Length: 171
Image (tube, rainbow, N blue to C red; front, side):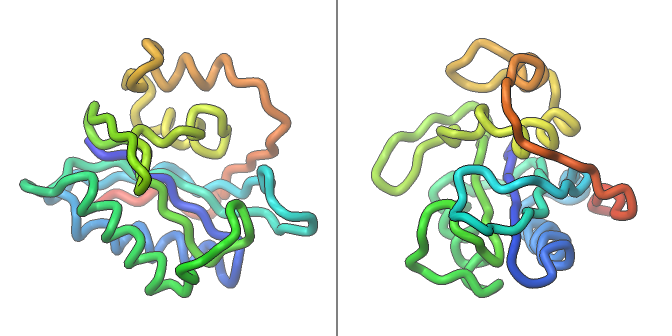
């Protein structure tokens, strides 16, 4: 099981996130990709005057042979296709941000990336949609489920479900 977080706060963020969800089908086994509902979220650790984000999470079973490294590279290419610059300031406004949060129970720690994502369990905008999809999945290295991590999270983040945008389920 792969868990990816999506976010955007530049341009038409809702359309961008929905299009990115559809692009992620290319890496999923047929009929396994599911998204949580889209959220409007307050910026976290962002520059002053940063706008709200549209965030979401998707889960899927990866195609045979797909590695975390290959998927991360593909995610960077998708971000680039949506207009994200190669060099960017952490937490700055962006057209699209795709974070590889979990890839089965694999763990990585390198200059390229850390898996599971190192800040995910501290973010309501990650845990809430992840809990909608896979609440009983244990987060590697914590001994706790996503539901438990969400219940224990203390944050002042503002998160609102976009009721008019239904979750996406791949056919």
